[in-house]
Every structure is written in structure tokens, then in C-alpha cells.
Picture 1 (cartoon, rainbow, N blue to C red):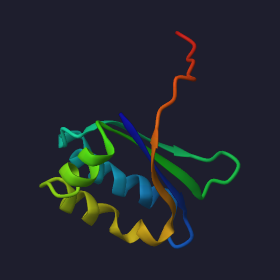
Picture 2 (picture 1 turned 60 degrees about the horizontal axis):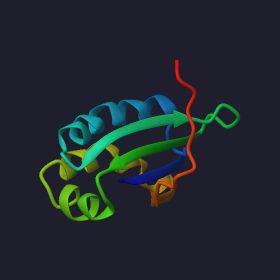
Picture 3 (picture 1 turned 120 degrees about the vertical axis):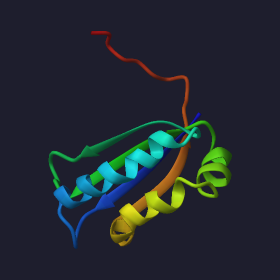
Picture 4 (picture 1 turned 90 degrees about the horizontal axis):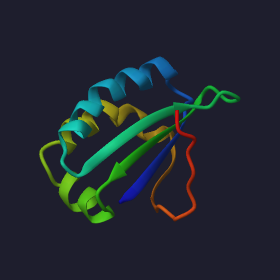
Length: 103
């Protein structure tokens, strides 16, 4: 599994607009077999800062499958206005150091 982090620092748009765009775009992530899940978070200390976390089956599946498949064009169309506000877009591999409290 690969985790993609997309960090936004909104300057030209507000958070409501980003959230609405991703409500449309995420339908195409859910339809893509390469995507395992996603989460959009907003910074509490700096409300114009957002992180989208997307879990992909692999980096290759994301870049070669999703990006070259039928779900990418409508996904991109929904979020295109926000691309200039991306401060980071990278793939990360999980490590074995993880813990979550149950319940």
C-alpha cells in the first residue's frame, strides 16, 4: 500500500469550496479499484491548511492505473481550481511503527 499526501494552503479559495470540490471528486476515487480509501483533514491552528490522505494499492497503480484510467479526468476537473494551492503532493510508504487505540 502507498499513501499519498496532498497538502493545500488555501489562498484564493475557502475551505467550503475545497470541501465541495472533493465531495464531487471523491466519487471518482471510490469508483477506482486502485484507491483503498481517503481522508480530508483541516488544520485546527491554521484553518486554510488542509491535507488529503489517499491510500492506493501501490504508487504504480495510482500513476499508471488511476491517472490513465476513466476516473481521473472527472476527478481532476473537480479539483483543478485548487491545484495552484497545493504545497506538497507525494507518495509515502507505511512503516511498521503504528498504533491505534481500539474503541
